[in-house]
Length: 439
Ligand code: XLS
Ligand code: NI
Ligand code: NI
Image 1 (tube, rainbow, N blue to C red):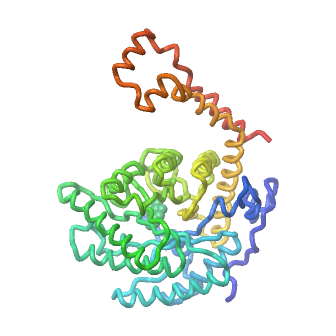
Image 2: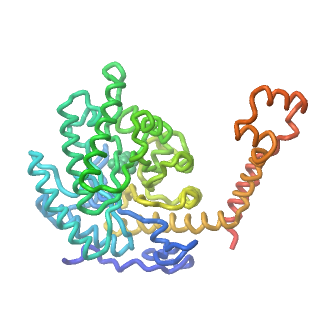
Image 3: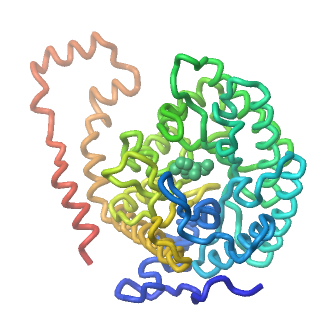
């Protein structure tokens, strides 16, 4: 197969390099805290943005040719696969993710669509065997086709629900065939525009029914990995059901799905929900549902999912801090659900974008490791809660202290203001800067 990119394999040249086609921070086989960087980070290429997205937006047509030299749809699909493996090889990206419709175009009839998926997944398998690249997760695109205009699992119409189930069944088979250890539910159009036409209760019950069916079927064909829900508060619908991690947790608990599901946290979705990226990761970690990450960043001034390649070192550091504190990824990884700006329209820009994103997270990992080893922030938090380790605090935690005991305790004390200490936010922010910028 001829090469698609006249670009060499991207080397690691270290932080002082000025070569735009070199990593400054990502050194895949370098060991940090007992593990190789590539194993800590588990970078994944997103098929949809990287191989398919051509820059089309609401105001204009595509700016980048993503036909990869092909002329008919299946030839383009095959070429996408070859080009993707060249990108992964040259960038030392070990994983990829896809929606069913990214890898093979939908045909008029489901049977033909599935035959196309069989053909392309055979090719993917062959390329994976040759290269050692892996599938991080698979998913089904149940939002593009007009049949899903009112939702898929939450559609008001049972035929549409049935179609979505059939599509997800096939996507699960593909995921298992390609050895994927994750399956994502991002609720594309699972939400509503107005409650005037919506049975919210039935729609959510049905979504849970679809998820239970998916778990049952996937386990029956040997899927051992994790299911993920990817929270997002809005877009495309005005109100997406999977608003944020806390909302999804309530859903998983209500429908008894916690054994099989974890979160796929996307940075830009967190900020759309009015949270920081770290907040979403922390809520997931503290509730035992930290799973995988869609790494991108939004624009502070824009209220939609801009899916930019991440370059914010503070966010990446605090993200990797949560990942390290969670004990690292098990089945999950860091998928770049990110795309180059419409004006960055050349194939070379794909490489610059991934280098920017990967170096940002590689530096974030290095800084998070430094932050944890530095210990000042963790120590501060530990001390801040030390009153829970003994005395009245320990009595509350153990359940020994009742309300009457607490009343007696404070009546004796008179007041407790003298027990309160400063939160030292500004000092801690300086510590963070100190860790980031000292040698
Ligand atoms: C869209 C989502 C989507 C999921 C996969 O906003 O981020 O790309 O990650 O369906
Ligand atoms: Ni995403
Ligand atoms: Ni998104």
